[in-house]
Image (cartoon, rainbow over the protein chains, first blue to last red):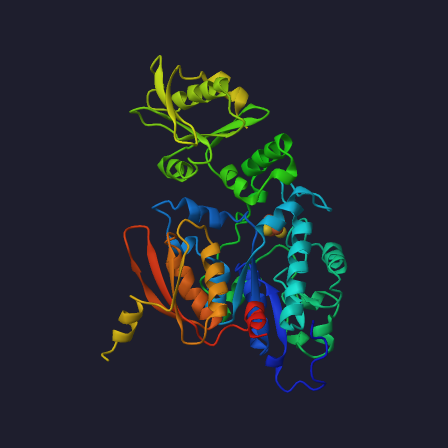
Amino acid sequence: MTNQNPPARIRDRSEIKAIGLLSGGLDSTLAAKLLLDQGLTVIGLNYSTGFCMNNFRRALDRPDQASHRVRNEALRAGSDLQFPVEIIDVADEYIGMVMNPKHGYGSRMNPCIDCRIFMLDKAKQYMKEVGGHFLFTGEVVAQRPMSQHRPTLRMIEKETDLDGLLLRPLSAQVLPETIPEKRGWVDRNGLLGIHGRGRKVQIALAEAYGIKEYPQPSGGCCHLTDETFSRRFRDRIAFLNGDQIKSEDLVLLKVGRHFRLDDGCKAILGRDEVENRFMAGFRNRYWTLEAVEAGSPVTLLEGKVTDPLVELAAAMTARYSSHRDREGVEILCRHPDGSERIVFSSPMAEMELERYRI
Amino acid sequence: MKPGQEEEIILNSADRRIDTMGLYCPIPIIRTAAVMRKMKRGETLEVISSDRVILVDMPAWCRSTGNGYLGSRNDGEREFHLFVRKGLGSGTAGEKRNRK
Ligand code: SF4
């Protein structure tokens, strides 16, 4: 049960348990810090949605990628500030929401309002399980176009049935008083009134608190805000029933060059050695093609594969191989069951290639 | 026992072991947390992973949740063995469920 009845007199604020959505970015780190400084017990929740760019970069494992650049920032925040962080995998459920968001999408395929509602609902459930008192986030009023305007923040609170139990420590002083403030669980004077897109206050605070290692707010952390990914995702939905899409299928939308061969089949061509190695890991699930004795992309065929489509994909593979200037290129085509055959293919012309590109 | 000897023994034998080879972040950490919930304080766990960044994340997870990070060894270029010891725990939902 949510613990809304703490002792009448709080002798020790550590009796108050605050549960926060923690991305590990500067804002959520600072929000946690403000509450820790008031002596509360803080738990950070980091939901893994399957759309996190960092996680994908890790899976690709480029040799020149420094580990600290792709570490889990929520864990880093929990480690630096010494409070527990729980990572929770919600990928399969999350995709259901992404397919059908009640409040629609942002400029790409990002359903930011529904995403917040989804995570807060989950956090509310968690709060009940651990006897938490309230939730908090690092949201700043009017910082982001879609999900952080004042009426939207209010609406999210209502839809999640968290009226008064959702604290935004960075903007609390410009928002109505919440239950934690009214009951003295948190001192409102120790919270902030940040508003708008500027980051100066947060950066100054980070300096004052000695928080040095935080990721830059580039906005580039969610695949759903990425134009290329969103285009491929739309294509995927258009040609496959939404309920057939699993979170693991989405992995391939993040890699390679994509070409739609027909309504039921697409080709994905690796762009470099790292992508090729990654895609080769799917050999036992998909047809794969590669030019023989040449620098070549690994090509995956996803969907219903027919002989003419294998030939089409072979021509694409030849075009991106180091033998692209030859009249014909030998392409090794491998069935997921391991059987192989060689197709002799002319590299596809650039103009024709563009007809298929997603 | 000489200093460091205990750690050395643990790096070769832990009470439990999980293999997360080929699994993408953050699944190895999620599995680690799930197994640790079922363990007793002081017990050790070996986590095998092919994700090199786990060498950064695992110590952070341990520090955040009040568990002990004992170290790691590599078996080849892409096989990391990490060793953790169950500590006081984090008081998270899983911990609480486990206490019931
Ligand atoms: S950018 Fe992505 S993770 Fe962030 S709120 Fe929007 S949909 Fe959710």
